[in-house]
Image 1: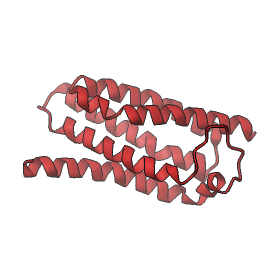
Image 2 (image 1 turned 90 degrees about the horizontal axis):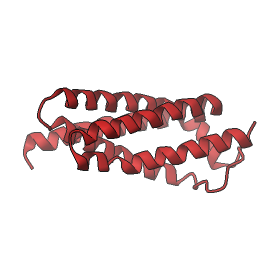
Image 3 (image 1 turned 90 degrees about the vertical axis):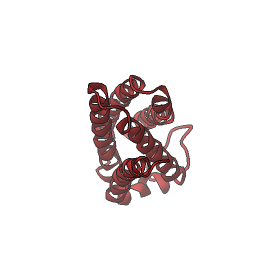
Length: 159
């Protein structure tokens, strides 16, 4: 792997993981809600310890995909794909803050629905550049879809 290529991947992975880490740090006080059973959880809820493991993997995949896009030839599609990536990453950043820190399950669900649309748009944008890049985002899309169910069910069970 060329040095420039390695640095590009490292940069994008660091950006994605950094956004996730900062969001998690800002939300940390509210994680006890889920972990300690202070809220009613729906069926199919994973244990709280699973979330950071899954997110580290998903942020790494996001970074690899963004790196692949960044290394593609300059084009309007590349610029759009990176813009959509950064927009969805910003939405991703705020969801745990809304859900865990502020316990606004209602607003978090609306925010998550918007994130779901943005991830779908990102997938389509990445697909226009490289099929494998889009495929790397399928676990993220599936996890966000699952998160919509969890957020909706938690909102419903904890009115």
